[in-house]
Amino acid sequence: AQRRQDPNGASAHYRRALALDPRLYEVALQLAELRAQLSDPAGADALYATVIADAPDDDLVERAARASIELSIARGAPVALLDRLLPLALSRFDRPVYGRAALDVLDAMAAGLVARAAGTDEDAATARRTLHDVAARGLPVLLRALTSSDPRERVTALSILGSARVEAAAPALLSLVESSSEAPLRHRALEAAVEVAPASLAESRSAALARS
Image (cartoon, rainbow, N blue to C red; front, side, top):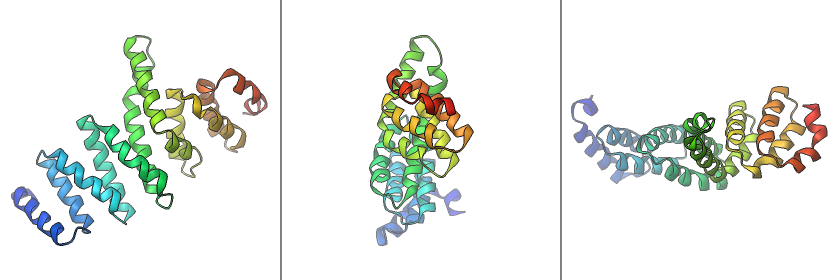
């Protein structure tokens, strides 16, 4: 109720609480949401970043990441968020939440580009280059997602890699074609591999492709 009636007063209250104990990550998350409502995206972003990096609770990290993704897309600054998440995703193997968050950023960045890249005009060419750069930037996260036990993560990674045509992903895609026991997944991996694999590499895996 206080947030609705006096958002600035509530913001000051939250700040005082955090000054006493910076580990009140739920409070930090509430303050970030309030700063976003008060048209202070930079302040909200800084608080979300703190929760993402420091909160020990994966649920809080996921909530902060989702809100931060929405904010970064609205501000046109998703690359900065991705650059913050990638080191966490690649160093904190004990916290898969960071890899999922980075994958969600990549998915959000790719969403508008995939449709544009399907055309034949200069805008489509620009979208393809941008999409390639996005996928190349997040390639370690995308490759790890290919081996995830979560079907959503595998499908997301395959969709991005197939559209982005990052040649460095070809060996991992072809390996998935060979190793997966799930026919739909093999077929999607094959479609993505066809888009990115050099002809010589694809030919060397002809038996695997035939089996799929």
